Length: 339
Image (cartoon, rainbow, N blue to C red; front, side):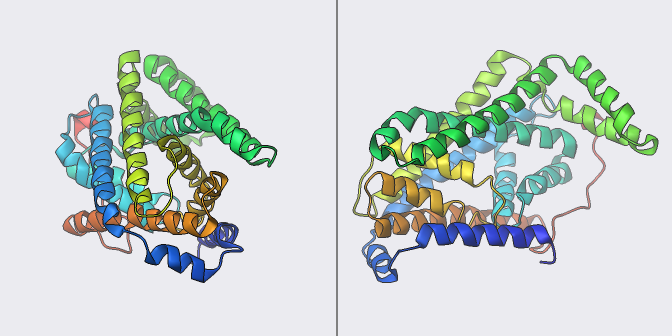
């Protein structure tokens, strides 16, 4: 609570909420929520959890060169991580699941973090693909409003960032010895002598965690799995839409999914408050959905995305002995094979 980054996130969330809800009458929002057929959330949640299982499979696939761990073992750890992202600031859930994995399976945190970062890069590439796929249709709807231009600018810069990171990771995976030499060169010039051995060890384990990208076939498999994951999540958007009295195409929901998830990379309060809602409402309004209806749908969708995985992750976290107010730091020593 004393961290300035936390309060900056709260301020960002407040700004986005104001942008999302300005001009909206509470009575109109309540009418849209009151008439919602909320039983449509059940199949949406079911599809979402299939996507979470696919995420666990993807992580298992990325970690195979480091250690073979079943998807069934990975699923609770993934749920704990997403719970952590929802209740801790700065996506601390990613660190949390790396630490839990080390506690349970002895996998070095630096190696598992490498695979987690790879996941995020592929997720970003898929989100950008969702956006670019639907920009022509969106341009026809918005005309000269500038909305499409803003999205295009963000998408172009995002493409440079994500594709650049992906290129670096692929090169490091394909040429690990050369990557280690490059890292050693930087460490020798930038890191104090007393820290060099430790930093070198972490960096080398990180490079080892990229081994699953060594072949084009492996990278393609990770990419295709990422596409399936995000199509399943868009399926949840589609099911929740049926709880309300409007309809847009599945492609429009793909665009919304891409935009809101890119927006949630902006630092905000835990749970992506505001940064999820404002762009989601804006996309739907662009497609002709009344503001109150768009807000009711987006807020309901946000709750349906947040509550189930947070509850499940909290259950698994309590089962692992993780307290609400802490991220575990009592890491066991890794096995020699995974250090």
